[in-house]
Image 1 (cartoon, rainbow, N blue to C red):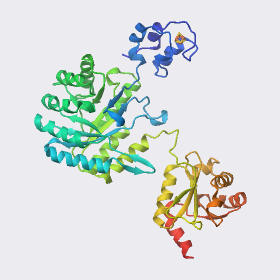
Image 2 (image 1 turned 90 degrees about the vertical axis):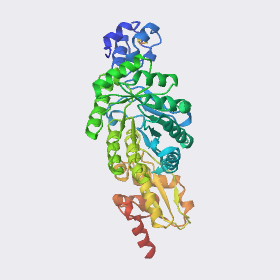
Image 3 (image 1 turned 180 degrees about the vertical axis):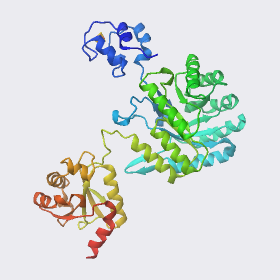
Length: 448
Ligand code: SF4
C-alpha cells in the first residue's frame, strides 16, 4: 500500500535544515509521497528509514532493461499518465515474433530480413528501428533452443525475447543466450516458481502473465517474493478493447495509486490477424500504454507507419524536433540555384526538402530558427518575421553563395514579402502555400 506523507514524515530526522529543497521535513515528506522528490535528496535519512521508505521512494514504474551491449532496451520509468503533463521517457519497444516452427534456417532467414529492412529506417532526419526479436516456442525444447541460437546468431544489435511458457523450452534455450539478457516470457500461475528461478539464475528480466488484473497482481507478489525485481507485466487478456482497458488500469494504478504490484513496465502481444490490422492494434497499445509490443508483421511499408507513430508520441512536447538553422543544398546546386525559405521545425523542413528533391531542380533551403515551430505558428508567435528572416539570410552568408538576389517565401506568409524586401534588400518571390506545390511552382518558373 502507498505510504502517506505523514508515514514518511515519521521516518525523517525532523531537523528542518532545508538541504533537500523544501524548507521543512514535512514539506519534503509530502513531495516524496506525491512522487515529486527523491529520498536521495536528504543526506541525513538513516539506513533503517531508507529501507522502510523503499517503496515510497521508488519510482512509480520501475526501469527494466532488456538486452546487453550498446543497444539495451529500456522500458518503463514513466511518471505521468498524459504526455502533455510532462513527457514520456522510454519509447515503447517493438518486437517482431518469429516462430520456432520455421526451423533454424527459416528463423535465421527471417531475422536477417528483419535486421536488413527494419533497423535502419529514416524519416524527417530521424532513425527508426525495431528493438527485439521474439522467438516463439512450439513445445519442442530442442527445436526451440536451435531456433533461439539461430536468432541470436543473426540478430546483430537487436535484443531477444524467449516467448514460451514451457519450463523445458526455457531451460534448454536460456543458458545459450543468457549473456544477451533476453526477456523471459512468461511466468504464469502454473510455472512461476521454476521460471522465476531460471530468470534469477541467469539474471534476466521476466515477463509475468496473469489471467486478468487481479490474478496478475497476486502473481507479481509471488514472483517478487522469490526475489525477481525486473518484471514486465502482461494482463494475459487479448483483444484490442480488453488489452487497452488493462493497460490503462495498470498505468493509472501505478502512477496515481502507487500500487506496487503494478509498478513495472507493461507489454502486449497482437492477435493473429492480417498485418494491417495488427499494425492498427499495435498502434493502440503504443498510444496507451504498452512499454513493449510484439507483433508478427515485418513488412517495412507497414512497420514504418507504426514506428513513426511511436516516434511522434515519444518526442518531448516541450522540445519540438528541429533541424540546425543553416543553409542546406539539395542536389548539385550552382550559384544560380533558387533559395527557399522555411522554418527549422523538422517536419516542415523535411517536407520542403522532399518536394525540392522531387522537383529535380537543385536548390538551397534556408530554415530560419523558429525554435522548431511550423511556418504559420512561428509567424503568429513573431518568430518568423521580416527581421528574423533577413538576419538568418545574413548569418548564412547567402550573398556569397548565389549570384542572384531572390528568395522564395512560403505562400502562407505572403504578407511578409514587402517588409522582407525592405529588411534584406532581396527580391522576394511568393512560393506555394503547401510544400506539395513546389515542383509545379519551380518548373513553371523555369519554363517562363
Ligand atoms: Fe528534513 Fe532531510 Fe530535508 Fe533536512 S534534508 S529538511 S532533515 S528531510
